[in-house]
Image (cartoon, rainbow, N blue to C red; front, top):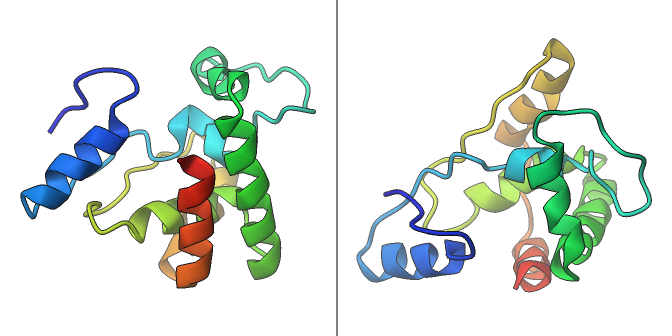
Length: 131
């Protein structure tokens, strides 16, 4: 199922839930935004995805999600990317998140999701921050 237009991931989740389906989100880390690479207080990042990822900082929601990811990551001693993927994998309408690494150094955070289990309270807090 392809996301029909910008701003509709909640609609996609609703439809998949209603029909008993699951989606496989392609940009599970929001073009790098959910890795913490693009932060409100951070410097500009030289990346081809910088523009699309940094747009998430233009609303209150983006920094709010990063703040909650920071909290949960600190509680687990994990990287933001690991927590973001575990959060997505915990959603009932997600079959599996897809994430890619450009460098070998990025792989451990992606692989760590297999061992990271978020509490129901953490998933709820992240869902609320994202709403």
